[in-house]
Image 1 (cartoon, rainbow, N blue to C red):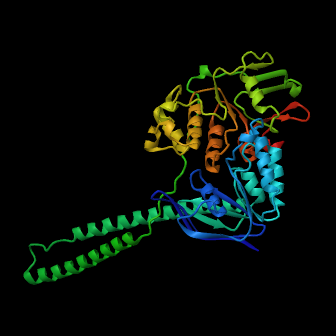
Image 2 (cartoon, one colour):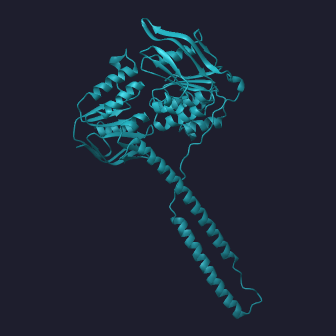
Length: 471
């Protein structure tokens, strides 16, 4: 049964086109994921589909009641609850409605892994169609049967799963590379052929002085015929070059390893963090007790656990110099705590990152470029950029300080998938120790070689000397 019909949608910001969508039909039991970079227009598209935003042209015709879980709900009435607890309340309200059409904008933000797995089941069992935006790749892979991808100001519908969509995009990238190489090769060949033909034309001999008049006339005629053929050939080659379909060079991320500059700044022992018999609680509530673990130097360790289990509390204990149960051997620490307080709004992006860093300006600009902050954008004042851009600047600043221990608390919240993948690469290339709190399963799988699991029921911390995908 058809629930919604969308035709010839266009929307702009000022005079700049944000995106256009030719056609989309939503049927009963569809689960549609909206993909695209931050700022591409994903939430705007969801707002248009829900009827809360009018497009500049085209139309949306919803044929049923709908429910909408928005990314930034107001939590004023739930000031005593955590972000995860509050998100569960609003999600429960949206999922328990009987509306045949459900819109979800970043529903996994602030949810723990067990809650995300439950959400997956609820989406799959929802009695109607679901359209969602999510940076959680596992959620998209496990639920969606169709994808709308917003890229280069165009929203394109893919009638396939998210995994199949990624395969298609990879093949498209390979095809683009092949077409560019073929175009470049043919262009080079035509230019060389034109130059060779022009050279032959110039080299045709003039009439020798010793020739008689009749011989000279015959020679001149022959030379003219040869010249005419060569010029015709040259012109034909030029025409082919002019009509040659142009294929731009595909953009590729240049990888830059992030290494220490001064070996004296690095702790060289086996364990950078050693915890013995640590118990933490507040009043009558015990978070965990008798915790014992050791974090290997240069490891990439992810901390997992339910909302409220004590993940951030554990990080604070690790950073607490007065905690007698933890021995922290790191010589220099950089910490991202879901806040942006390490940035100075009055300074430019480049100035912020260059403070306290051990890299050259060129290396810093290369790292910023990988995070999609390029050219004159590095001279923007931090106070004038978006929240997503500030998060990227924080990452650049943290990874260029030469710390032998970096701690990241939920670094992927509200990041688009492309930026998350870049962050994965940067973490894996970094030759120091990284400790990360994350509920993003794909992210945890791709960056971890060890895991700290805080079990809220048993009130224990268990250490696994393997990556998240192996536990």
